[in-house]
Image 1 (spheres, helix red, strand yellow):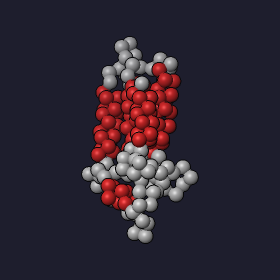
Image 2 (cartoon, rainbow, N blue to C red):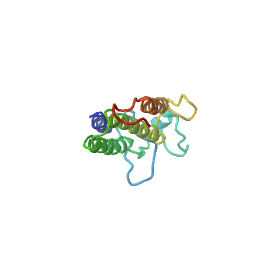
Image 3 (cartoon, helix red, strand yellow):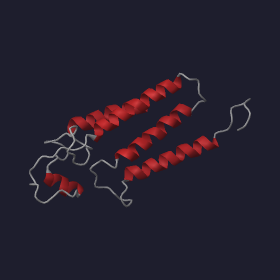
Image 4 (cartoon, rainbow, N blue to C red):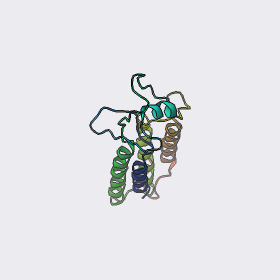
Amino acid sequence: SVAIGYALGRVGCFLVGDDYGVPTDGWFGVAFPVGLPPTTAGALRAQFGLDIPADVASSELLAVHPTQLYETSLAVCIWALGGWMLTRGLRPGTTGLTVAGLLAVERFAIEFLRAKDDRFLGTFTLAQGISVAIVLAVVLVSLRRPPLSGAPPG
């Protein structure tokens, strides 16, 4: 349910023009004239420090990567995988750990395309730092889980 909730939340971000990506010339690019902020060259320069050529007028509306839709699609896939895993009779916690880990990996990856102003960790964002911490926690919890009673260790 966390993955599908995250997917729905990102639909909301798309509808208000928030959390979008960097400019793109691709056919899939979306312009947000009333986004938070709008995707004008001037706003992208001022808000996110993006390197947009000086010959592009500040008032020009630019198409950006719709990272909200990318995340929605990936979260729906993770949700579907989690649902499938629940039908497999896996060890308790396996599905939750897998979903949490995959959502963290998804967020880490999408941040490379997102227009952000919080690159506190060199070229990495705060969200990427948190994602790494979540993946490490998932790995540590997975490694420290005791064997099922009656099952041979290993």
